[in-house]
Length: 275
Ligand code: ARG
Image (cartoon, rainbow, N blue to C red; front, side):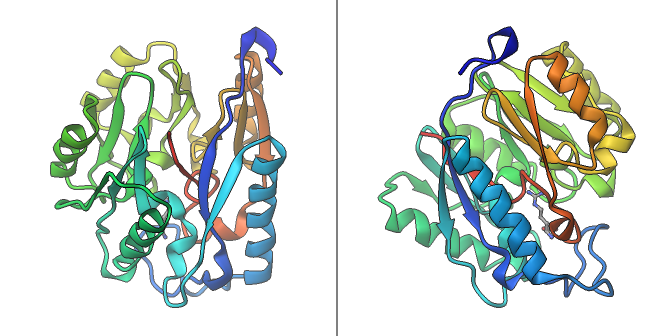
């Protein structure tokens, strides 16, 4: 059903991984505090809520089997980037997550993907790659190597726009920017996460972007997933609800408080399998 202003959801296919083995035992971003206990049953319930919400919106959710000893595997967005059915594998920046890349590749091989590229350069999947109609936006500064941008451009044959992240709280692009309409070039972002030059690039490419406040960014409100109409985002980012509605979107507020303890939310838990 089209929403206000002609917004329309298109059916999506997502890959997710249960937080059955989720823990915070190391700290590789400022959100992670190993001294803070994690409630695993609550994490699983919140994650199932997100998965079931996608399904009730008509989307397909595939599940990757979580592996013990890989506590961050729940952040499935980081395991690969899929555009036009072509799979760019991940290569993680930290040893603690290295083995996740192979788990994702195994899944793609078992699901008949035949165009799979194992990367030479560090990239953490959709953590740092965001796909709009015209571009692949690519973060760098904390995780992805700038060299991974050229590698992605060559593999996908789409223009890759490098963006410099400067605030450690927003260590991945998907903590600072979300694609709202991927049939157009519509995004929302938090300017404070980017260098002055990258901010100027974003203003030039996306003059009509929804600009998030610091408070909504700090609630990880930009770690959102849109199907073109419904925008699933962390509920604490309530300041984004009205601006999204004014644009004709239907915000869907989710509680992923346990997953926030690892530095992720809705988008981090969701890898999109673009046909
Ligand atoms: N603890 C994980 C890390 O620091 C969180 C990853 C979040 N994922 C994301 N797509 N931003 O690597």
